[in-house]
Image (cartoon, rainbow, N blue to C red; front, side, top):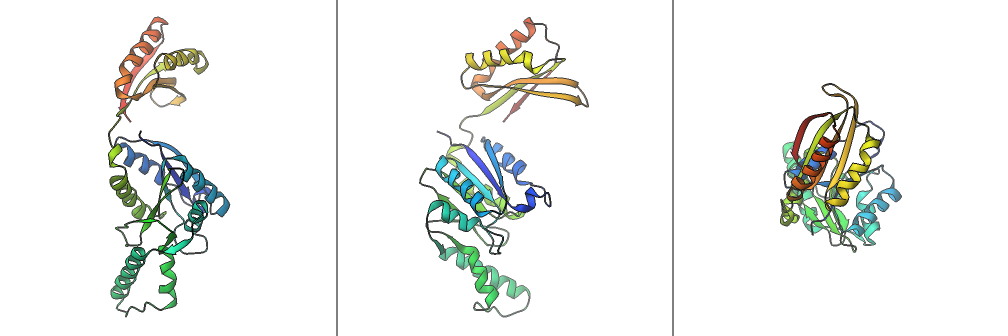
Length: 273
């Protein structure tokens, strides 16, 4: 079975509008390139109880979940601590993470023409970025070596944790996908086939949608209304989506019924999803 894929975005700056989230469209893109799809996304502020609750759900879900943000070592970064609380495991300095963080500190000292002092207070504090729940696996960070981490929950869910910075998070999401999820790539190609209906009303289409879903298990029927589309004006996009092999039969029945009822049909659209 292919698991569901989820996304958790952590940070007050997203919910306040100070920064716009860029992770959602990118994760959708990275999954789609591998024949996978995002099932859900959660946005959570810098609030420990809420982050912990979101992670508890993820660990119990059996899903593969990507969490972006809050794994730094400043007072407003809570994700590492919340992951440990959600798993009911202690936090511990990961030896490989510590080595990578020290490498990064040495690189920075060298670039600044300074001697590296591992006992300097700020350098000691930076090691907190390698403190993960016990049993965590690291996710390499190609941007600055400071790793993320992955944890498996008792309910079968796996959460991959990375920073909120897109330049770091996106290659780390790709790495986690390619190293832990390759067995599910392109296993069940998905297709979406739809048509523009001029002058249609969603309420009138509901019985037809229900009929198609009942007759074709595994297929979802969708409708997307628009009142001010720049090309089609007021219309409804009606279509079917699901496993590619199941789409032709469902589409033929949908199209035949629309034709029988004299629907005012516009262009068709086919998209691999």
